[in-house]
Image (cartoon, rainbow, N blue to C red; front, top):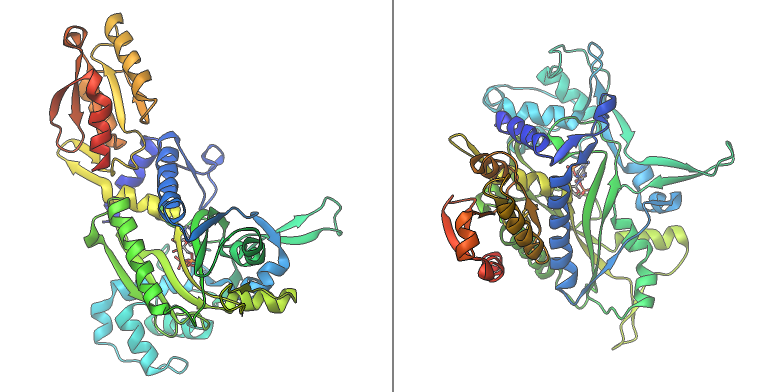
Length: 483
Ligand code: ATP
């Protein structure tokens, strides 16, 4: 499966989906640039998300908050003190790695051996150890517990194979920014580590300036920044990434949170399988146990996708109670509430938060769509989100009449669909290229087209070719896209 990932990464670069960041200067770890084809795909995913969760709902409004925010926002949210990863360094090869990832990878890959081992740890309880062996998770463990299990299991450096670690230390993930130009007189602010705080900080503004009534959601799509050290797996984990988050505010006295939670699970699941066209067997839910869940959350579940490197978190769903708004009330000294128009009661609502990484959705779409059929590599991306819907070709590049007609058709169709034009190489090569970027349909203008005003439409998935009158192409594709 690691091999599968290498192929996807190679295709992504070869065909202009994603490039390593700052590659010209040797690269910058954990950053990526989206190429011409990738940019289209990313936008389509974002637009579908926004359309589904904002435009098509009457109970959710949008927000686009600043990327840089006041340090107090992050003090109140708990990020300046608690938003950190436990890291350790290999003294031999200097590799820095997340302790939880090192341990979890080991547990995942040594399940058999672990069955016959018996330890007597001092800092880890017998239940904790058993649980870690079963779930292969150590989220929420202290640095001391992680150090102990690394020593007990003799977990070696995955890069150099030595067992020569430093202790486990916590590193904050927030990026500080220093505002102002005079040194020593600068104000400390932070690049946001999540989009969610924008919704809480603007809660009062939104309730005062719009017609929202509980229950309602505020959605945001935008960049977040985290000083991550984990390398590999392409855009799965990067230091700059796009989040799609919704804070769904409700009055717990009027709503059954469990019902709302289940409703969100269903909406998220449908978005992935129907919206993005992902195979359902590659998805699952994972409930957070008490250790892993934040202390203020009553329930957290992760939707996980079966990436080529295993089932990993795609989309988190958490019932965060009124913790965030209460924290901002405490730190700002302001009251944050909305008035229930029926009872005139002031309500500081509770919140359910679905939070997804758009770049993880992007990687999932590539992984799920990737198919090899003999010589042919084809990305079976759902046509709704495919970078280009239609590719238009003249049969021969050196026949003016064919090129003229194909260009005319391209101009007509691109008014309605995202199209691309290609006249390089032969038709077979053009098909292979379009298959690799996931274009669902190729349209060829040939000599007959000049007479019968029809063209050959070739389907990406079946490779079947049909003849369609040019005048009917628009309705032909509209119908196909509605499916
Ligand atoms: P992880 O455990 O993978 O670090 P998280 O639990 O810290 O993720 P959240 O803070 O809940 O993640 O963020 C919500 C979503 O944002 C995640 O489900 C994931 O899809 C995405 N995400 C988080 N960190 C990154 C990152 N560094 N790069 C890309 N996407 C990310």
